[in-house]
Length: 336
Image 1: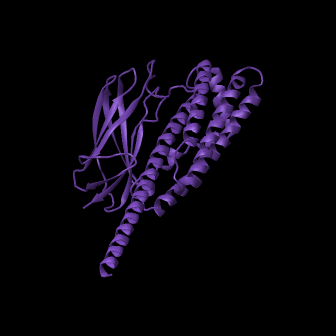
Image 2 (image 1 turned 90 degrees about the vertical axis):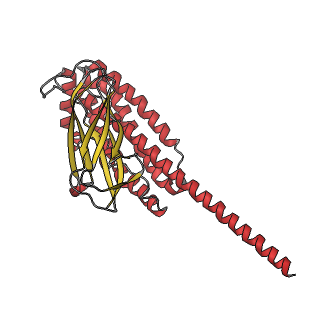
Image 3 (image 1 turned 135 degrees about the vertical axis):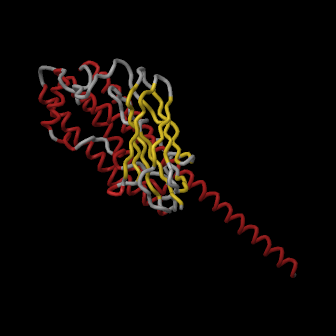
């Protein structure tokens, strides 16, 4: 009888351990799925930001009217593809509400680009110019609505889900500026939009006010590896770095265009809000297809033992249109 009781107890213990192990596996799988979801949305947000940069460069008069129409049609197709990708994301139940906001915001952006593509020929023509331009101006409010969804609904909902699952310290959410499609509130002024469209139509917009003019062809640089004190920083993950007096960032920058670029500025922002500090260094010259490394000292001492957001940006050069790979966000915990 005693042996039977012991055997039953042992079997129950094994069963309990198996159940706990199974639950642990499910929890780990769910955590991994949430992290993957955050990484996927970060990628789509970066692509959407790239579309914004191209669209508003176009509307500011950078290029010929025919080229502008071709580009906005391409952006319409790309934005629709981003919506499809957003809808197809594997969103665990914990982030289902955030996913709904995210898809709606991406759909609004695609709708706005689609309407601009339809209205642009009329805005650039001699007839029906005012009606078409007004329609483009109305789309700025659609973009603004998408930004509200991203910053006031999607991001807080996602952050709450991460905190509830204990994952807030293990993933990096995009900075507020990366969530916004509309580059400036002045685009909400119909008169300002009309001025930009007129400049595009007449060829007087997008004039270079700097010291030189970009050479023909593709221009652009991209961020490669980023290390801090020898520790590799990975977007979407948190890194622990010992705080020393000579701590510095090493940033690789690759020329992905068709021309040699000079005086390329690399900017590092440590922290956020009023406590943020910015440090810049310049790369004198980067040849086509080559990679240059720039070292940027940490600067002012950051807080220890806290998640410190880090943004690394390669400032776009003259003529650069594709900028979705110019910046990256990281999180660093400094230790004493």
